[in-house]
Structures are given as C-alpha cells and as structure tokens.
Length: 130
Image (cartoon, rainbow, N blue to C red; front, side):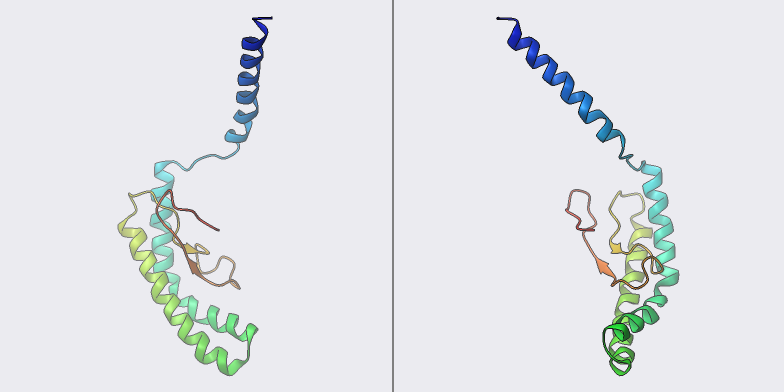
C-alpha cells in the first residue's frame, strides 16, 4: 500500500507530459532571423503601400454610409491611416533587431482589404486581441 501513492503520482506526472508534448509541438515559434526578416519586409511594405489606405477607407466608409460622407470622411481617415502605417513601417525598419509583435492589423494594406486598420500592442508579453 505504501508504494501505490508514489507509483500513481509518477504515472500521473508522466501521463501529463505525454499529453502536453503534442500540443506544444504544434505551434512552431518564429526564429530570431524570421522575426527580423518579417519586420524588415513589413516595414518596407507598409512604407511603400501606405497610400492605399486612402481608397481603402473611402470604400469602407462608403459601404457603411453614403458617397458624400465617404469622400470627405473616408479621405481624412485614409490620410490618417496612411501616416500611421508609414510611421509603423519606419518603426519596424529601425527596430528590426528587436523582437516585437506586429503593431498594425492587418499586417499589410492588401490583407483583408475591407476591414478597418487597427493598431495594437507591440512589445512581447503584452496581450494581443488579434
């Protein structure tokens, strides 16, 4: 009877490791080189294609309201997001060696073209809702 409790505890411990291993193996982590490459490419991409935020926001606002408001409000919103996306691109280029999460969502202006552009936490360890 004395050997049953430690044996059971060892079996539970080994069993929990056997269950956790496949779950952790499914999510490959980005290597340092992949993070630096992603940040360099997203920085260049966001700096060069940021002007596409203007027609994107005119279309989004037009789908939500009328053309008159879309042209004025969407134009202003697109210009603000153009400046924001260019700033994020510059920041990604400068901070490429520092591992961070992507700041702008969607990552590029052409990804999910009909969704609003949002900006979130960048530092590792902060919660992301995307």
